[in-house]
Image (cartoon, rainbow, N blue to C red; front, side, top):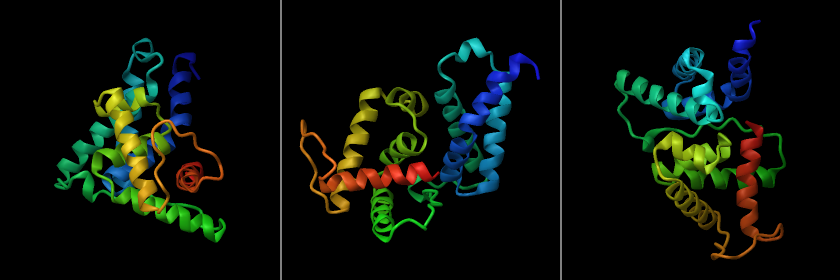
Length: 190
């Protein structure tokens, strides 16, 4: 193996699964998602490593997003993100109450506007930072933060947990914590 390709192999190891789930979420079709992710990594192979230094994750998600949108247009599926399904393959052997909390959180996510759903997905499923989400979506970092804050409040409201006001610390015994923990559990199982 040539040392110059080690960084591509490392990126493949770190991001292939996350990109595949993201592309499937955008396209609703696993085979099309695989094609998009494959093309994303082919393009990464052609990129200059120095140009991407420290920005590999946002670059990969941006290319994947653009290719998925193009693929959806080419396939005649001009549906908006409103019609896209959230890819859920949660391991259902967890305790009953955990499954219920997770179902409530996922149901709440489905009610969010498309831009909020996308930033929630990129943050909790993709594991990206606000800055990386900003680079992928073209939104400002502050807009990403606002959308995430608004989405989390809406999720809390949907699951029946009181929304904490600004400046309130979260503790493990607060009810709204279970909604966020449910989302983290969903992400960890991916």
